[in-house]
Length: 438
Image (cartoon, rainbow, N blue to C red; front, side):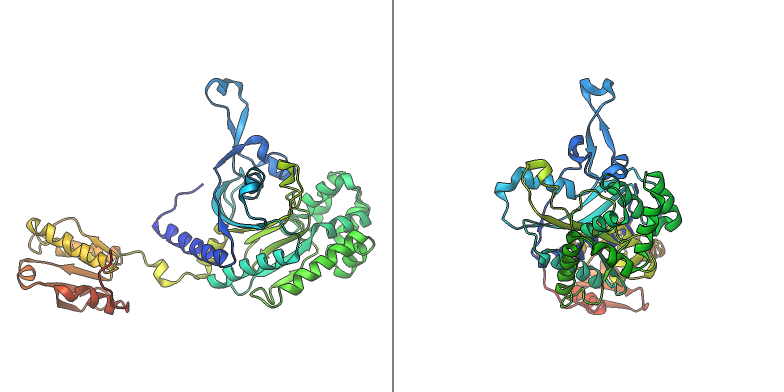
């Protein structure tokens, strides 16, 4: 869990603003849920590994001495959404599309792009089993990444029913499927040999484990195994429909069938997705169809599909690649307004207000220049703040209704009429002229 300094916050807000704009263009509506959920809401939804990473909260007040837990910090945004849909079904449209950008917490081991508190940027669509849902979701996240400047991402695509058919054909007992998927989900992280050992340690026959792992290295072998059952052929047809629907939108050329993709969360029931880039161990985001999760809360089978972008990992890659626009990286104000003497403080504050009303970012240097004696300190501070201009209003400027401004990039200094100073600075910043704003 980290502190975020001003530059960090600006970069994060830039990405969040892009995500929000794109998601809203696709018809997703905003939703927020509490940081805390009842412990029974979260447990049993994420599989064996996930349950270990939930931050549990001890009972309070009279129950404090029991050492029991009744609440937990939000582990993801999907399970809280399922609870919301179950509770408020009558208030929601038949096809409910929502986006949610909030922090989640996991008691995980920190690593590059992996933290214990981090933001997820989720989109989910409730109420339809159509492959159009997955196609729209893939298009939305692809457009987000392209807007941010990513060109080399891959949307990896697989299907839980394909994996089930493959495990059946490999000789893995149904009771061990969940264990097998948890192990398989680590293939990219720990490699084939360690995953094979993990499968055996979880009670899966070595021969069956070798057949599974061999299928992930050979698409033909994978296809041969899944085609043995109607479940496998149906899932393959569903993936083919999704892939075809993505070929005319922003995801064109970025979607790739990936047999080894498993995703360890236990609630997935259909198509599953992850976004990979070459220089990141792990994904920029992932998701899939989870048609049974909402029914755990309301007893009614409600189809659902979602995708989550990992804000922290996006920020790591964008920072390392230098992908942020210059105006996001720039930290300082457009203008630093100085106070020439104590008796001119009100005049300087009035000027600062006028410049802000004209749409400029303005900071006031709070210590008087004392007739110019402290001018060097003010300019040194302006440099550390990366200000573009310094404005000075002395007795002569007040008398003549003008302002001295200095461009710190070029060193040029000029005296400008008070009524035109805002437009003069905006022109130098290559911003359009602006009237006063309320």
